[in-house]
Image 1: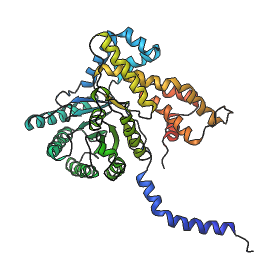
Image 2: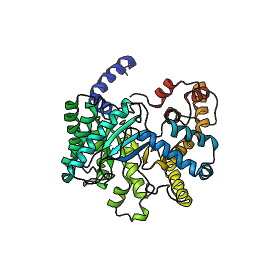
Image 3: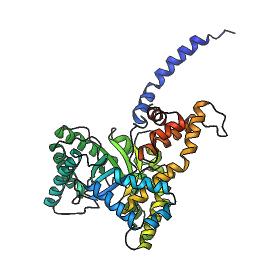
Image 4: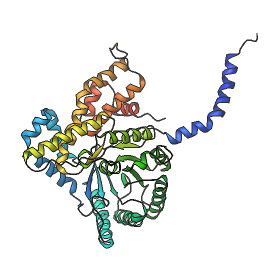
Length: 412
């Protein structure tokens, strides 16, 4: 029997397999590049396109604090943690809105063309001014109407009018995103890519990106039974930043009665699980939708609104949806309270497990590398949203912010 030369056979097989798998390796790197790093906002605030003003963020923060102060005892009762309440107050003063979407779709409605033209241009000017004055949220964008035939040209015109006004007034397209609603086909995503290419070439002020709003069952299940949303992600040519779930449109399309339309309905959970699997490894992030029960009115109405919002935000976070929509300033206190509590509740355990893993300390939990990445991501998100400080996490783990980010979102 011939003796095997391990070195030679290993080298030969390695070369052969590299050749066989070259195309597959390239496809994997292109299609699933992993998270791009950077911060993900915890929410997106929607305001009608005719109501955006340069100091809107400050106004929303003031209004949110006013709602909290008016019902301070109730808020403290519901949150049950003085430290969280203090952090919420600081957040509402320092950064009440993380991501803003100036809306020209459902929140704006159908108006005369000259009216929408004017509002789009005025919005672009106002956002440019807000950025110049350092009064804009970290992330901003607009929602246009659908690219379906009846609203297609209106959507294109609004998009072009807005970004023209924005860039003509000195702003760039960095950290700016266009929300594409009611997507029903891969071809609409491809059309949006084409729109971006043409618009950014004309503006010459950065790269345009967009997010896909999943509001129709056709996005989840195509006529041939495929998960169409996955094809949409890969048809975006790297321009898609996120998938956003549209609670009420999706529920209505599924025939769910109005009293039962909710982010927590089983139909919603099914859609969001498909979205989660489609986005995994692509760098495309996820956002849950909204609740239409607002915490306004008398004390019982505010209680119902805050209780529901706290519950739904926490539920989304536990299911890996780290972002959602807010539609009213009075929702901001519970958005941040639920988010901060989610991270602080298990932060001590997460940081201890990270410390034990890297110090090779014996532990009752045997964490694997994949879990360590999840622990690091949890701690990193806590810092990015304001639930914890970088110094607090570093003291608990001996990992600085750079090392934590490398662990949480390693490049492929």
